[in-house]
Length: 222
Image 1 (cartoon, rainbow, N blue to C red):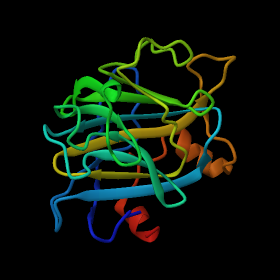
Image 2 (image 1 turned 180 degrees about the horizontal axis):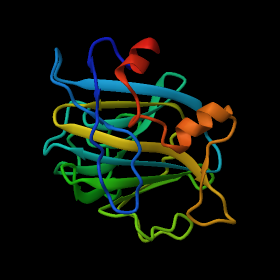
Image 3 (image 1 turned 45 degrees about the horizontal axis):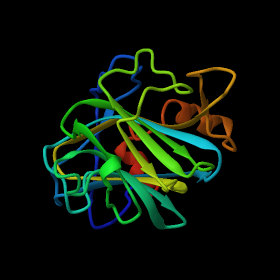
Image 4 (image 1 turned 135 degrees about the vertical axis):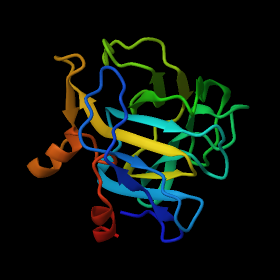
């Protein structure tokens, strides 16, 4: 569904982003030039505010950032709590972890340009109150329980969320967005967020469906 009536919805492309180690299902979400300079989309889910939660997606944006874009925003009870993307910070248009005000700190800036096709893995630890992010060209061999050094880290930030919103200017492509937990007994075995119906689990384990959304689904949910 649309996150704001002020902006144009993203559209679905039949083409998927391809990153080694990630299986794509369905099309991708892409910017459409129609009406406004910003596209948006959103989806709700059960509140995430405890333990460790992962957010993962494939993306490729442009070479500039600012004005609130590009950003994958985390929202709780209608208020922004954090985001991934950039808003003119870091000194260059790189992938970054942002706080509720869409601001960065030095450690939360990666060295990977937003226009680089990447797999992005975000780990939110609500107990340790820290968010870490990996921005990688491949997820082959990635161990969610014992990952390498992160591309960026924001200590003191662990955004709770019950909604994910996406805002971007052109160009922008997003695919395979998922929210999940990892079982300690099975490294890299992604477990869907609990408290969802079986039909919703099928959707979320295929990735919270920013990738598989169709415009008719967004509009019917508006």
